Amino acid sequence: MIPPLIRRQAVESGLNLIAVTDHNACHNVEAVIQAFAGSGIHVLPGMELQSREEVHLLCLFDTVDQCQGWQRRILTKLPSLANREKIWGPQFIVNEAGELLAQEERLLMTSVDLALEQIVEGVNTGGGMVVPAHVDRPSFSLLSNLGWIPEGLAVEALEVTSHFVPDQGYRRWPQLRSWNLIVGGDAHRLKEMQRRTLFMMEAPRIEEIQLALRREGGRDVVVEWPSA
Image (tube, rainbow, N blue to C red; front, side, top):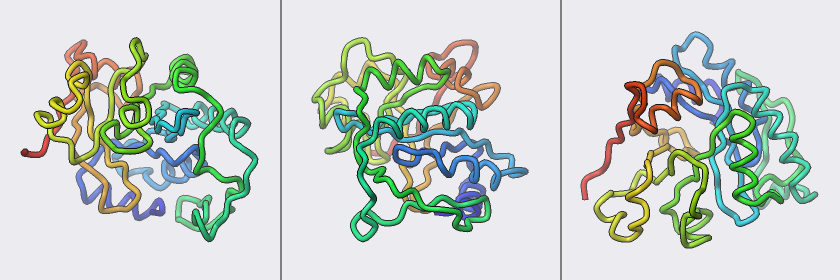
């Protein structure tokens, strides 16, 4: 998934808002933003952090500087392990054309030494927002790793997978009824990009997304759910 191909798929899918959330890094965010220039599609900078509890958290920001600031902090909280390319694959850093600039040599596919609540508090304080990722997955999620959603967790929404069916999901996890649920692509391949969550808001900013999730000021969120 290189920037020009992500752009083409987003245009063909009729998207107008995407987020780039690589694992524990935002090296390629700026390249994707540059590739989308003039497309009419807004790119939110972000990353998918893996907390100390091995829970995946989508961390979204308004600016590249905010995202890169968090990346600098994260790199000090990652184990000093070298990436074993034959096992985990290469960790490419590219430009807007998808041309190779460098490789991240430190292993990113691991947990950062920060607890769930520390990440949420830190990102919120820095003007971003956190969405616990794919909470209905059997691994690397709140429900699989913790077994519950911590009381008072300061997030506006939870992400579920594209296979989540509300009636079935609520029977299995009743606590989800009290949460805003959204569907993201969690796309590792172009064909996995999703067009399932519609935000009705005035601008593609974190503050507006939060207002939409709260249904405040005329904003709203609509999710297209699959049939049972």
